[in-house]
Figure (tube, one colour):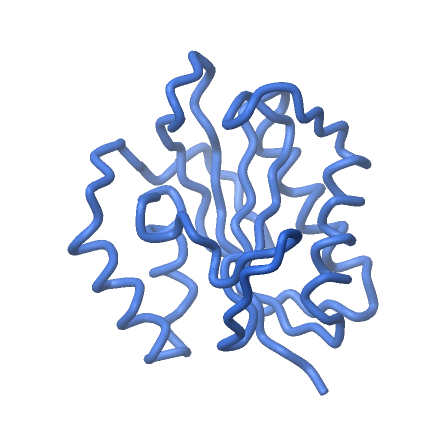
Length: 166
């Protein structure tokens, strides 16, 4: 049985676009994950009050036979492979992979909260998600509603350097 999950991926250290591309390639390399859709790249203002460079962010829709906790473990392996250091909460990072949704699962254990609790407060998550949920009308409606009601005032703009993630 496969599940549909939505991921958010961001980078603001080093070759940001290459970091995103490598993360998507790592997802594709796992035989238990099928990358279904990848959003455009968005350049976004950092949140959390830590002075740092702007982020590049994407959203990714996947089909997976992994359970949510095993998927999370794999995402952490990808972060390690791409030299993620967890030094400052909401601080700079080479790569950050988060599970936003996993089917319609609701979970609040100490390891994984689903849906991700900060979605409604993060335009850098909502804007790319809106782009990749066109084939999921229920999710698209949820995302549009959150975009219209979020208190997030940070800027998000399409990153246009000619590069595309596939």
